[in-house]
Structures are given as structure tokens and as C-alpha cells.
Amino acid sequence: MSVWAAVLAAGLGCYLLKLAGLSVPTSVLDRPVVARVADLIPVALLAALIAVQVVATSHGTLTLDARAAALAFAVLLLWRRAPFLVVVFGAAGFAALLRLLG
Amino acid sequence: MPEARAAGDPSPLDSVEARRGVVRDSLAVGLATGAYGVSFGAVGVASGLNVAQTCALSLLMFTGASQFAMVGVIASGGAPIAGAFTALLLGTRNTLYGLRLAPLLGWRGPRRWAAAHLVIDESTAMTVTRPDRALARTGFLTTGISIFALWNLATLVGALGGEALGDPRDYGLDAAVGAAFLALLWPRLDQPLARVVAVLAAAVALGVVPFTTAGVPVLVAGGVALLAGVLVTPRSSTEQARRDPG
Image (cartoon, rainbow over all chains, first blue to last red; front, side):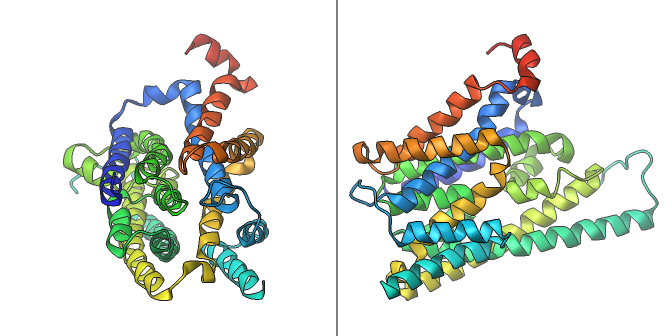
């Protein structure tokens, strides 16, 4: 699958997911199991994405480098209630600084 | 829009004042959120997409976490289809938002089709707290449209800037993706179960990294949410679960 095909298919799919929510009867969400799984899916996916993004290499190995240090810095910023942009570019700047020094 | 006014509607002056307040708050959220499209644009081209593909994601997908997830999977060497699946899984939460918004907004037909594209975290947050349908629609449209316009403009700026920068690693942009995901996850970690699921999902993902191609670990970790949601029954909803098996 080319990048373009994936972009178009995922874009259309994400739109249909939004439309489905506006169109489906509310009773579906009344099932507690459905509601709990739906709440937890973004948590699991985001946590996994962070782990893979920060610790894995493109060769399928795990490593701790400037990305992990930058994530720790992001935790500090979030804990101090910094806004989204500050967290994202703060972490980038921290990683860049470490690479410049190292 | 010709709409029947709800009974007990406040005086026209009060309602103009209330509307102004909703517009002001919604625009503030729209400006703050739309601006971080710059980071998506920069991360998109850093991940190997071209400027047009990065902008197409913001235009067509228009849901930040899914967009970051898709380019994140591609950046780590994953197949585009694995990125697309991850984006769709993350996009399922917009379905839940839609379920909550439908009765508040009360739109049908073409208006519903158009509104659906604007169903995201922020537009939902600025809609669900409103006391009546008129203010809910004002909050939804002001937030949704201002974010859509700015997010796409900012994506273009970030993507063009990112391409001119050279090696994105020199600027730490690869680390920016993890930080963006963490900032999106952070507000959800206020519940103990969410924290446990987050740690387990991260561990499962890293555990399967050596044995799978990129993109797959994240999908496998999604199984943690499925298991936790099915197996862990909060005490408060035990009664309800018993009455409603499956």
C-alpha cells in the first residue's frame, strides 16, 4: 500500500468513524463493557506509541538515547502544567541540545 | 438557521451576551489548538511524508492523535497500512464523542455530514457543557471551524519549514513526536486503571518490538485495553454489568 493510498483510506475511515457516532443510537454506549473498552483504547495506543517512538530503533532493537531524555523532560514540563506547544518544542529542543553536546 | 426557540429562553440581551462568551472561549481554544498544527506539519515531513501528503492528512483526517500516530508509525519504518490501522483505532474515540454530541446538536442530513468532520476532542469539550442547543451549536461550530482553518494553515507552514530545515534529528523533531503523544495521553492518566493500562500497553509494545515489523507492536498493545475493559469491572457498575451480560 503506497503512502498516498494509506493517507486517503485512513482519512476517509476517520471521517466515517466520526459520522457513525453522530448517526448511531445512543443505546450502544449504554453497555458498560463497550464504554470501558472505548475509554481505554486511546490510553493503550498512546502509551504504546510513546514507548515505541522513544525506545525502539528502526532495526527492531531497544535503546535509551536523547529521545528518552527528552521524554523525561516532557514529563517535567507536563507536571509543571506547561501548554502543549511548550511541551512538544521543549522536548525537541532538549533532544537537540543533548545531541549537540554529545 | 430557522430553529424553534426553547421554552423559557432568556431575554434576547442575555442570550447575545451568553453567545458572545461562548464565541470568545471557543476562539481562544481554536487559536491555541490550531497553532500546534505547526508541530504536526514539521513532524509529518520529518517522518518521510511529502508536503502534500502531510497537508492531505490535516485536511482529510483532521484528528490530531490519529495524524501523529500515522506519521509516527511510518517514521519508525512501519508499513503505511499499519499506520492507517493505528490511526483508525485512535479515531474510534471520535465515534464516542459523536454519540454524546448527536442529541445536543440535533442536526440531520447534509448538516450532520458536514458537522461530522469537525467532531474532535476540543470541539466536543466546548460543546457538551452548554445549557441549550443554540449555545451548543455556537460552541461546536466556532471551535471546530477555527481549529480546522488554523490547523490546516499551520500544517502547511510547519511542513514547508520542516522541509527547509534539513535533518530533523538535529532539531530533536523525532523526540517531539513522543512528547506530543505524551501530552495527549497526560490528561487521561487521572484514573488508576488508565495508569495501569498505559504501563502494561507500553511494556507489551516494547516486548514484541524485536519479533514484529514496525506498527504491529502498537496494535498488539491495543489488546491490553480490550482485556482490561472486559475483565476489570468497577464496583459501581457491577450491578449494571450483571443485568446486561456481554
